Image 1: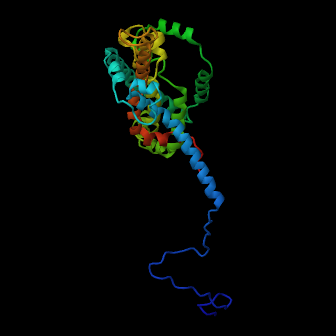
Image 2: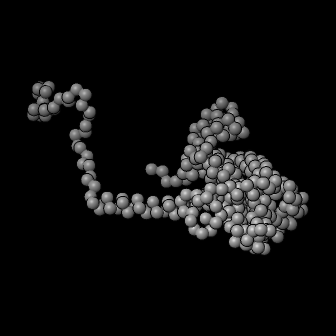
Image 3: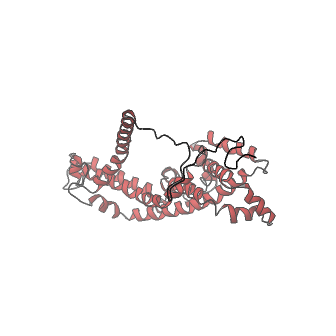
Length: 327
């Protein structure tokens, strides 16, 4: 019998160096670390410069609007405002917020956005869950009908006649019911349910005697916070920025949303500037003040969304990756 310290054919076993106490374990074949060449560094620098230029091109117009809204209108008109406010003032904001219609518009828009988003989620999520179930046999036909509506529409006049026949003219529900369902958002939610909710959960729920309705409410919804935040944000922003609905279907001033109220204020000041300004005010000063109000209108209309987005950013970043290629 061969020596137990040797190999099977009697050859001596290879010597193994003892590992020092505390030394990390390393594989026998060490990976070579590729050294970065001058070309690699040059590519990184060029890409960094391009990204910085694109970032500046996107951020600077927004920053200029903020700075210009707090600056003296004459300094903005003469081009003195670049990065920092010049002649700090709140004239534009004072004129905007002094109009009582602003607060009515804010109240209406918040109501339409919150209630509309709740109705959107209440309709979209169950439909997406039904479309994600393979045992639901009519889902292909229903999905085709849903997709058909994304490519064809009746147009403005049939839409107006339909809204009139439904009794929604000058009614707050015209902001909610016609846009209660979005096929695009339903497809996003359906993809999430198909790829992110394990089928084993449904099997376990069925063994416990849980119905589809209970499974949807008690298991699927708690696990879908990311997609709910994403499509909820989509819906909320859509309601908040809705300008066309109030322009076409609403005549009652008490029901006008914020976007239409701001448009009326802006048009009134532009008309005043075109008429030569008010008493004791030159045409140039009136135009500068109208521009100042325009900058303030942009900030007033977008500020709530800018405040809301950071709260949902972590869910939004996760949800927008739905359907991406996974390794």
